[in-house]
Image 1 (cartoon, rainbow, N blue to C red):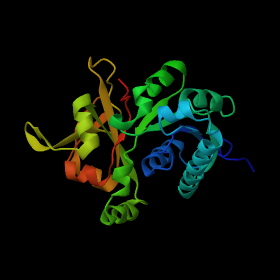
Image 2: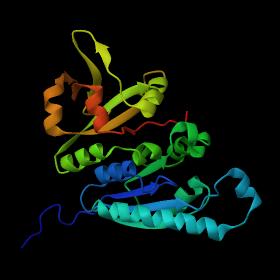
Image 3: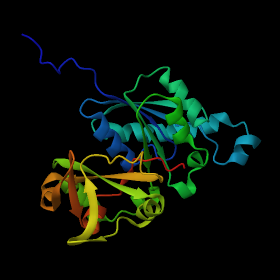
Image 4: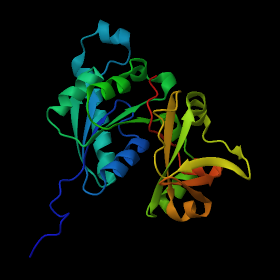
Length: 264
């Protein structure tokens, strides 16, 4: 009996580089979306010192490796719970060197780099995401994770996500300038007046093209159940469908994932 055309295809492979955020739900959701069924994941956790001063004043490599190993165990368990085949790798303290080393032992289809928000991320201060994109000819997605937000998510929101977890979801995109992006990351989406339409947030089902927009832009992505989205469709623009959703609804399905580079 002949096998089906897709039965022999290699699973999609995702390389994740993250420190304290490697087991965050936002990272797991993003990787699950990109990897699809049977996806393979390699999580690289650099063995970092907690501060720059500590990095220079101590050679306690074993302790840093132990802490990174604990983060890896939590991350692998989180990915396994999402149905992904994941393994971990302790990386160099320099995240770019850790990424370079990982690419020698793992051939990913794309890379996901996860950081804290801009105001508390040392990786963004060092332009790690931008430098990785310049160095490697691979799709590199930057995921911003606010761990405090994840820890304080109300039980009602958790139940809501559990109830909609089995529903087919649509990924929608919203482009923001830097100032608006910081506000969204801090307090969520806000309704904006729209001429001739109710106020809300404009989104599309395809990532907007921002390279020629002149200023720096951040693209946010939010997964919303398909049966919810259909009521808010507002026509098409080229090949992309346009939607006008209430901010309150979007925030229930957040936090949004930042697709752009916040390191500028």
